[in-house]
Image 1: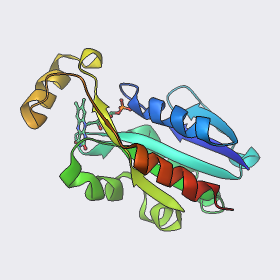
Image 2 (image 1 turned 120 degrees about the vertical axis):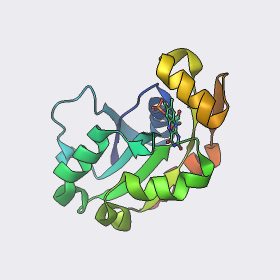
Image 3 (image 1 turned 135 degrees about the vertical axis):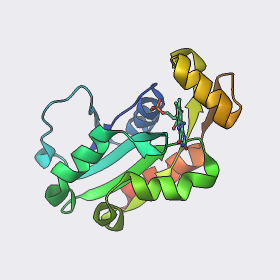
Image 4 (image 1 turned 60 degrees about the horizontal axis):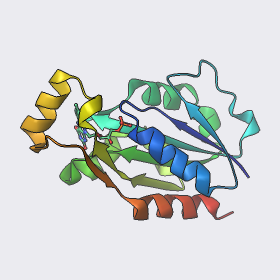
Length: 157
Ligand SMILES: Cc1cc2nc3c(=O)[nH]c(=O)nc-3n(C[C@H](O)[C@H](O)[C@H](O)COP(=O)(O)O)c2cc1C
């Protein structure tokens, strides 16, 4: 089964997770939404869509991709994931990240944790992360268990 892993990333963590997922699936194609103008979904049997949460929202490119390709996505096997660090908000952030119809249709949807990579942040981002989360050093909290659960659900035919 051919899988498209379609994602947007701001500091590279969603891309890292997308690569982990790709490495554990038989046949997967990675598509970065910020680098791909036109995406032809017809060659794929399933699609995994991922993005990260910044100030409560997923990247606009992910929302646009879901809305533009809604009809086709609803005829495919779909998995969803977000990278995020504010654990108390995980359920709500996942709920807000993708259109309800796509979430209801999805085989699996997971929050896979995330990272704060201080050296990739600009001054304002550093200030906000320190103020809101109290974090001033690079921190990784990628949830490998959640990634594995997503992958195993997508592997069930
Ligand atoms: C400026 C900034 C704002 C963030 N806001 C949120 C947030 O509102 N909720 C949350 O759960 N995580 C938040 N995060 C954590 C990111 O989701 C996390 O860093 C994620 O791994 C980023 O993935 P990316 O590098 O693929 O963009 C924020 C991170 C930064 C740097």
